[in-house]
Length: 322
Image 1 (cartoon, rainbow, N blue to C red):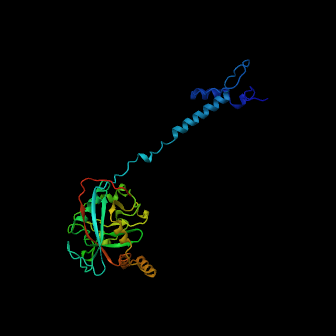
Image 2: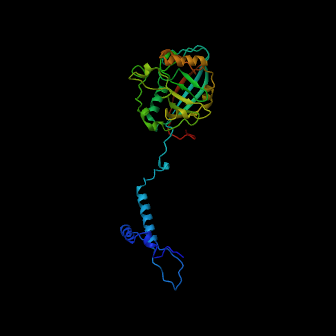
Image 3: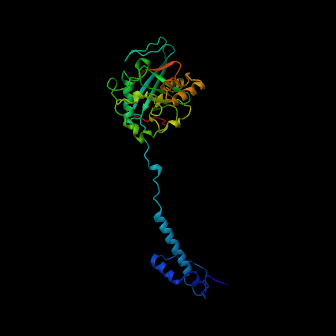
């Protein structure tokens, strides 16, 4: 029977000179292969073919291992964000079914039948976004801040927005600056780490960037500070807001008030009006943008009747965090 170990086959499989060169260069010795040999039969020497195959395979594996990139770092090594509640603020919401008009810095608005809806307590993440939290607290504590200003947009099943800047007598926030509150320049709006937390559940509080409704002339002011904020109302998450707004807090108490605001009737234009508005906006008519500011606005005036800060003696973690 023909054998791979025959003398006639070996020269045609691989030249002996090449075996010697590879073995000398790589300096790798394959492990001998054990086989059953009778005592009378002399032990055969290792086949040059097996030796060359093992040597070439070892060289190939070694070169491949050296060329592979290092494994990526494990996600488990990334430290979690410190979602400690460092500050607590409250917002009292009221509804005015008839005429609403804000008067001054601290005076009550003109509303003969104002009804208190309830209080919402917010916990703020001061260790993640300290500048955003500091400015929000200033707007809650200051007389020219959020007090006696309207909720100007409610998207059912998603979120509501407050803090629109404009004329104080119309229930809008006075633009912060030399004539109003002095706020810090918020450099966190260009920090990628500030956009890490997600709008994963109802009750998430975030600074409006993509949903900001302030007029362009206000935004172009060198002293402009963005103070619009939103609160997700549920029932599900709002992934379309992730990476576009800065999450800086969560609702600790008063989700029933948040749901009541979300259920309020809002102005919804007919489809034909929407189409005409889109056409006017395409043609550059500025009135189209002004008209859109009334869309999704509550039919009854829902406003922040009071707001302020609770003193936190010891920061704590909330049971559930976004």
